[in-house]
Length: 591
Image (cartoon, rainbow, N blue to C red; front, side):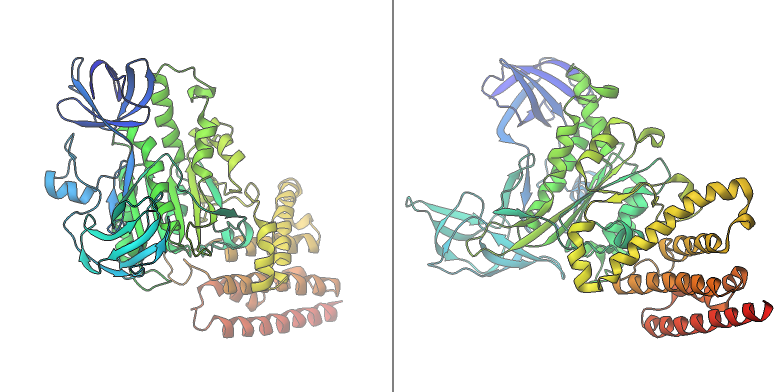
């Protein structure tokens, strides 16, 4: 089925004679066979967004529909790959066409030549249905790729072929109830705008350990949860997302560079192969998929890149893995929506964004969750955690993308440019951020870290909030006018900020912190606070308590090597108690 172009407006092309095409069909446009997708249909006229540069395209050129929606190829070979927004493998394209993507180039997403060692799990005679595992492929040293029965297929296994196969070779034959025989390969396709099915969704109950103390202790995110990282230019959104991608305790990371600068993706490409995964000891790229749709790439493909990434993530979730999708940034994605909406001459909403902005954002974030995967055996649980950066112009959180995102996500890490300029990283403002998972995660914390952990977390937050109100008084009358107890509050808050919340990405021992270590550091600071309050009540001088040697030791506690920190912390506690008691005795003598 083919039509003719009647209008070209940037990435938007209008073609007539497309009566037999459907909305969301992928089409090939013009003599160069540019790839596009039908957005709207009006009679036999189709509005198409083209995912490549349209310069030189004019009226009269032919448009051919493929009859299928925009889909991704799923199978062995995805991990360690770098794709653009519509799943074209950039390294393969570079090998074929050089460093610039040739318009209209058609390269399969999965290598058709490479052979994978397939180990069957199912055997002839087994009854299988959608989601059942036919066999496995060791895709990388840390990812076991499970080859599953595609959605819509069920029946009895007639044969399974072990050994080395390409992704297009037939590895199994399944006889369906109506007598037909389905030939299955290691590759399947899935439309990106349609969520993959599952049995049921569970409330998230397990925290995602990121190794970042301000996140894990104060504003935790659950596995299967959603989070937003808003902040102005230069406040460290990309830094936070890189840290999450590097250190989160998930099995697979899908990193989507959506409309951000190319040098940020370059940093990821350079760093990840060299960084050692703390969970496996292997390179981080062994469990990472990168989707690069940077600011110099066609704007329409940004809109697709988010869906491409989360569809790949759902595929690995269906294998029973914990997957994290890191989207940087949803604001650039929303800008692509706005541009296409304007060219379609739709009625604009607030600040020119389309009226359906909030629902599109919700469609993305609602694909996250902890689910029971499709499987006849049952019990296979996978999780998909979605973290999206928001780049509001001028840091204005009242703009539509930030507001729509805040209504959807349950964790909000508000970045603060003033903290970033003071070199306080992660630059998350503890007064403006929140996590709505605290109640659902409390049973896990109580069981694994003890009920005192959440009590200490709440105590630390109250001290930080009290510091904010005391700072207003200090600006008026000076610090010396405060009572000794209030001066201690400021000192403890300073310890929480500088010695606990602030982390150094250049010090190996400090860029990742385990839950046990976080719990011990926090309890040590709060123990100092409590001992000092008791000492002040007994007549000790506040300044004497602030200058004890153990106070400096607590400040350096985060750089103690992992092998010895428990011994060092125990000694610090003993020294702290003895030195504070000495300050009490000295205060009593002065009196």
